[in-house]
Image 1 (cartoon, rainbow, N blue to C red):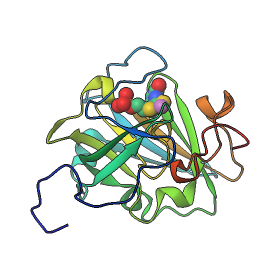
Image 2 (tube, rainbow, N blue to C red; image 1 turned 30 degrees about the horizontal axis):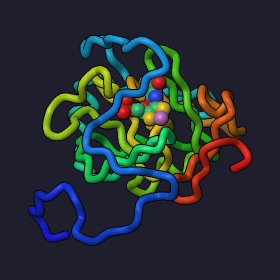
Image 3 (tube, rainbow, N blue to C red; image 1 turned 45 degrees about the vertical axis):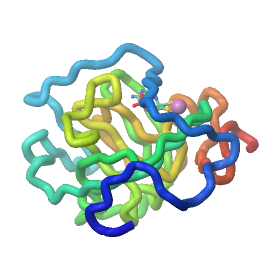
Image 4 (tube, helix red, strand yellow; image 1 turned 30 degrees about the vertical axis):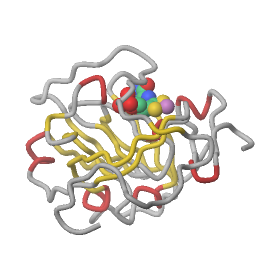
Amino acid sequence: MSPGFQGRRRSSGPALPPGQYLTEDFPVLSAGPTPRVPLDTWEFVLTTETGTEFRWTWDEMAGLPQESPTVDIHCVTHWTKLGTSWQGVSLDTLLEGVDTTARFALAHSYGGYTTNLPLDDLRGGRAWVVHTYEGGPLPAEHGGPARLLVPHLYFWKSAKWVRGIRLLVDDHPGFWETAGYHDYGDPWREQRYAGD
Ligand SMILES: Nc1nc2c(c(=O)[nH]1)N[C@H]1C(S)=C(S)[C@@H](COP(=O)(O)O)O[C@H]1N2
Ligand SMILES: [Mo]
């Protein structure tokens, strides 16, 4: 893609992940009510396996280097949306200077939702805490003020209303993983349910 290219669709690109169809709209999938989190009390807390906490307020998060990923997202309910654009802070930035040997992470949200993923999947420019969608504040129903964005995994791993991430020595399944969904959730390998 050339710099400044504004199109939403690729003229040629990879096939859709197996079992997915394209959608142009942006469905809302929430397991419960939408929490309303005021920005002046919002915080993001990274907790290591030894209990050390790294905290960021809204203003502190806004003061970190910002990135603008444009990515395809894949929901386990079979919709895929191409070329969504976001702004936020890379997990690489948040994990800088965090001393850990943990291999797993459990994201948790305002409202109680949780989802697990290997810590490595939060690294390497593949995961962000995003607060902006298509140039505007992330709407509450889509996870605002801020959500996790981990587009290389099924979208249930992208915790809306994210409030923190706990680093863990042992894997700990989250909300959907406990309910029978796949522990990892790679859309390209169609890892929808446990055992896939
Ligand atoms: N806190 C929270 N995060 C969540 C969910 C949820 O119910 N609660 N649903 C997940 C699922 S299953 C999907 S597909 C996406 C949906 O995001 P959207 O509503 O912005 O499309 O959010 C994920 N993150
Ligand atoms: Mo989903």
